Image 1 (cartoon, helix red, strand yellow):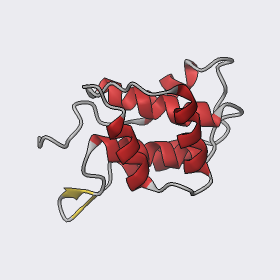
Image 2 (tube, rainbow, N blue to C red; image 1 turned 30 degrees about the horizontal axis):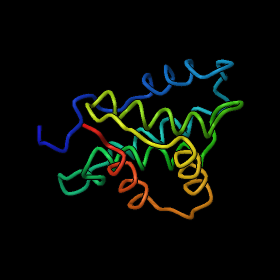
Image 3 (cartoon, rainbow, N blue to C red; image 1 turned 60 degrees about the vertical axis):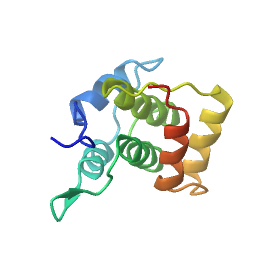
Image 4 (tube, one colour; image 1 turned 90 degrees about the horizontal axis):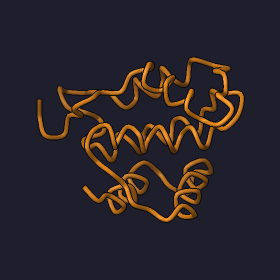
Length: 128
């Protein structure tokens, strides 16, 4: 395992559990985006991770889930909390202004920020 590999790789079970923790326990309307998010975060080419850091992996997760809604409601909250929980599970805690987190999610949804910028913002908020 390299230093960029997560201690706890992403899987669909993790995302389903994250959805259960949201207010109102929204049901999954479409499982495709969950599997797409897992595949994207864990993608490799030429024996290298496509997203070479935990922050880029979390950014790809956030962007995928916010662009491909899969729950009956609360998709933006799901995208944010899934990315934040994925980082926390892998030892990266964030400290951020809540309004800036909301802005980040909305920028990701509107294509105002790509994966690289999202990842840099997440890294800037890292306290561990």
